[in-house]
Length: 159
Length: 451
Image 1 (tube, helix red, strand yellow):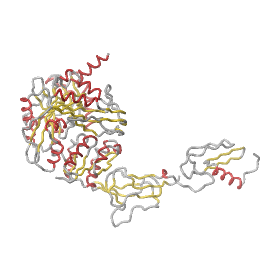
Image 2 (tube, rainbow over the protein chains, first blue to last red):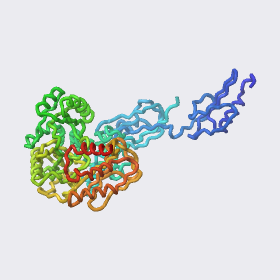
Image 3 (cartoon, rainbow over the protein chains, first blue to last red):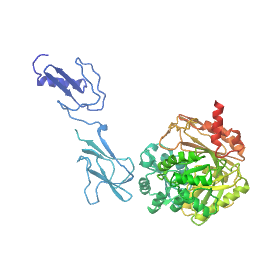
Image 4 (cartoon, rainbow over the protein chains, first blue to last red):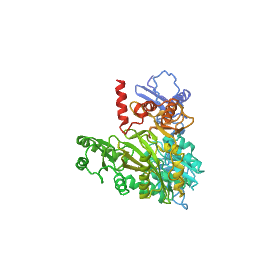
């Protein structure tokens, strides 16, 4: 490789190449020049094993974005579930007159109350254990829940 | 009568209670841990609620979740089975104060009998013979040594809150007492969250014989003939039979009357068992009372043609005792406890049952929650099946048991089937000559034969 800097067109080509060959990560280093491109996989599919001229490390997990950033699509297993720690009755609001603690699509912070589970006349506040977005609510207000039952799915916030 | 009951237990006893409830026309609610998702009681009950993870302390001992489940499913009564919360007076109390009937005796009765030391004192007042021992909790080793010296060695150290052989140690000398006291205290603390110990005179050549009592809420009490439970390993029963080959009519009548009087004295209102030690001279001493259904209840049901669990549920619903006084036994009942354990080392052998054939035929009863393909969870006891035989005479009941066990096939886990077959063909066992030391002698004999 010569001293000439890599241009926009060549980067675009490289990105297309990665996509075409289903690669997730590409690194090239020569004297005075270094490029790193990685992309997230749209689905949880094993990275295709393709031989390329340069030594290309193939990590098992998608790497955080550095440059080129195609849209992020989370696989189902990247949702986190909030499950019931007890047997009781599920309430979405602190009392019937109040609005629900959270709605689908809402951002939540770690430690924020998501719902109440009433057990033995005691109101137990269930908190989110991560920052993220409420993706789904599995139980209807006022319904009984058992231990381990899924209550919410949360899409964690990107770090 | 209730219309729906919750069973706060698992395994074969949960299944036993489901059967009784169904026969009475009641709906059942199973509670289960995450490890018991595919267990038979979970599958066969009308309703089910998951109450926690595999660890018993967080599921089958989780009182709020069990009561939550009862509330959700609108159960009216709670059957505790045996083990877990069956003899926890606080649980019985909370059930009642939350508006559920506890299918068992009054909480105060569980409390009284649960404290082995208080129970001894009360039984003395009921004029039962009690073994010489400490009347109060033994606080420390110096006190233990003083008491032991007074009554003479050997002595047995027991957990005041105990049961199931936990915290139980035999000391034949002062040195052994010094050695055993601490570990017994630790075991009692670990098992019952109460390190209190008491000491009793130990009778080496005695038999463990127990009497079934049943009382209702109208003041009626009846007692039934004995179960012989001397075949024990480390205080865990292995084989039980009824009647005992050692007990004659005269002794049986005396023991039945004594237990019945004692149960009446304390106003007992459910199913219970009085355990006695009987020495070579046929003198019997009260050991402890169990305020629950026993594992070995089927042998009594077999020889008396009764259903004790149905009776227990009916009594809890306020019905009068239906069992007449003075019933006679008919035939001989034998029970073998088949455990998932290594027959030589006795270590538990959890795993998946790949292939299973259980015995059947006339006079055979199998109480089991096992099925082919079932993965036995490692979180609980190792009981896989209770195989029970009934025949007109003892030799016939033994022969029937041998035949049944020989036709039993369990593949995938190790079981103590070979141990049972060896005991059943032992000369001393066949002749009914045995006491609580039988298993020790039997194992010594077998080890020598192998050398």
